[in-house]
Amino acid sequence: MTKRALITGITGQDGSYLAEFLLDQGYEIFGMVRRSSTVTFERIAHLQDRISTVFADLLDQASLIELLREYRPDEVYNLAAQSFVPTSFSQPVLTGEVTGLGVTRLLDAVRLVDPTIRIYQASSSEMFGKVVEVPQTERTPFYPRSPYGVAKLYGHWITINYRESYNLHATSGILFNHESPRRGLEFVTRKISHGVARIKLGRDSELRLGNLEAQRDWGFAGDYVKAMWLMLQQDQPDDYVVATGETHSVREFCEIAFDHVGLDWERHVVVDDKFFRPAEVDLLIGDPTHAKQALGWTAETSFDELVRMMVDADLDLLQGRLSGLS
Ligand code: NAP
Ligand code: F7E
Image 1 (spheres, rainbow, N blue to C red):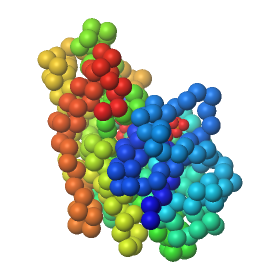
Image 2 (cartoon, rainbow, N blue to C red; image 1 turned 135 degrees about the vertical axis):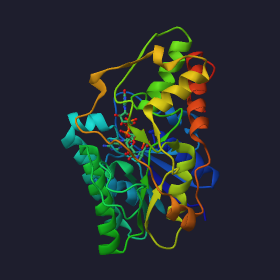
Image 3 (spheres, rainbow, N blue to C red; image 1 turned 45 degrees about the horizontal axis):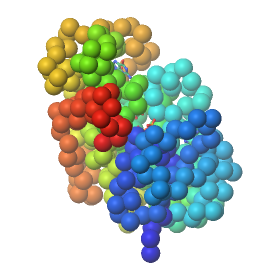
Image 4 (cartoon, rainbow, N blue to C red; image 1 turned 120 degrees about the vertical axis):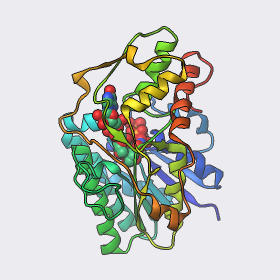
């Protein structure tokens, strides 16, 4: 029997990689999209004839119930969110509605329509925020530092609550930062890779950034979607940290990215107060031991490979060699 998966957030970075991965596993894919006056399918344009796009919104409970009733997926991957941390400071209520309460709407739809549907919740290392332990594991206490982190923490706990209250196969993947050539241009890694490519091609001379000292555990999104799938293949639902186990600063990312094209980052990067946050997450580093032992999952792409892949893809994109979807 062909398995059916519903992916919310399919138009985002992870949605596109997960759809590719599940198609390779033989799944029938339903990608949930929200109504927009412009088409936002750039990342999944190459998959359009292999997946079905279906309309609903995490803000609308009835739309989620109808969706599950009509398409009856075996697995639901909840990737949809307002995911940009600075926007969560300027739009905290919207972020809470989508990134927090949206999870409850979806879990409740699963509970009402078919409680045997397995569900994956995209939790985040942002929940660790001002970290109380290094490295962070599934048992590290949380201390979120942004409305986004707070909303994700609500989503995390409501997932556990529905698992324990209604016996749902509801799993939470606590994923650390993962990047790719498909990352949104506002996130720091893609902002740097795209900025480096523009400077290399003579279209810009400087790149304005915020806190260069922030450290993140950065992996490749293409590796991380496999962990999501593995989680839903387990007999029992659980929580998993998914990370590389290494941390690097924004400064290091700049050094490698500029060096890759023969430029000195210090001649081009300008620190701009505009990009600092009201509260910062200084250091994240995950311990993926549980994912390795229970799922057999490890990150396959090194930090250097990731940085170079992103810069090369942006050079290609700007020179019209490909769509940036490699
Ligand atoms: P992304 O690129 O920002 O994609 C977010 C997706 O959510 C988009 O498809 C967006 O649709 C959709 N969405 C937003 N509001 C919605 C709503 N009200 N109803 C339905 N869909 C809505 O995020 P990502 O990087 O792929 O991350 C995927 C998930 O993992 C997110 O939940 C994120 O918070 C979480 N996460 C990400 C990371 C990371 O490092 N990437 C780490 C940990 C957790 P539009 O295209 O219409 O805007
Ligand atoms: O910032 C610093 C910034 O916006 C990383 C989301 O996917 O990962 C992501 O959240 C760091 C921060 O990602 C700029 O202050 C410096 O310390 O790329 P980011 P994030 O906030 O870590 C988590 C795991 C998620 O779940 C989120 O959805 O870089 N930084 N200068 C900058 N950041 C940005 N965006 N722009 C700058 O100019």
